[in-house]
Structures are given as structure tokens and as C-alpha cells.
Length: 76
Image (cartoon, rainbow, N blue to C red; front, side, top):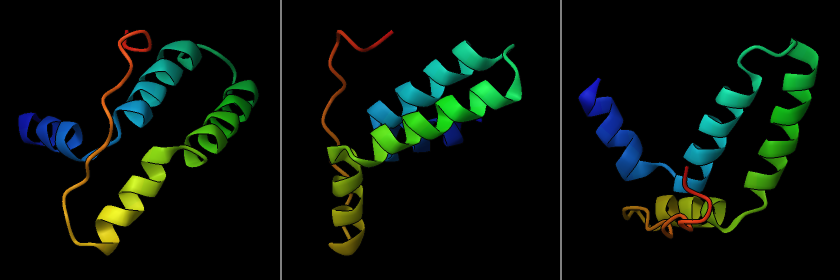
């Protein structure tokens, strides 16, 4: 579990991880249909972000990702 957590921390977008965590907390006890609709909206938002471009560039250039830090105002 610790190795998996380290891998997520090193290789996943902080913004994407925040979004997943936020949705988990918000939709944990909600019905499927509204939760699914929110997940689609959040996915669209994240896919339009700079982190996706950085991830694709890192894979193409065969280098580690360099995601920007999460704005402290967004971290919870």
C-alpha cells in the first residue's frame, strides 16, 4: 500500500488526485446518476487542463512528469 501511495504521489497530477478525493467525499452516499453526471463534468474539466498536456509530453519525451504544485487554496 505504501509503494502504491508513493507511486501516486510521484506520478499523478496533484489536481487530478484532489479532484478524485473531492468527488469521493461528495458522492459517497449520493445516487448513481447524479454522481456519474458530476464525474463526467469533472473529467471534462481535468482533461482540458495543463496537467494532461504535461503528462502526454512526459510520456512522449520519456521523462518523469513535472506537474505544477497544487495551489494551497485548493488543497484540503
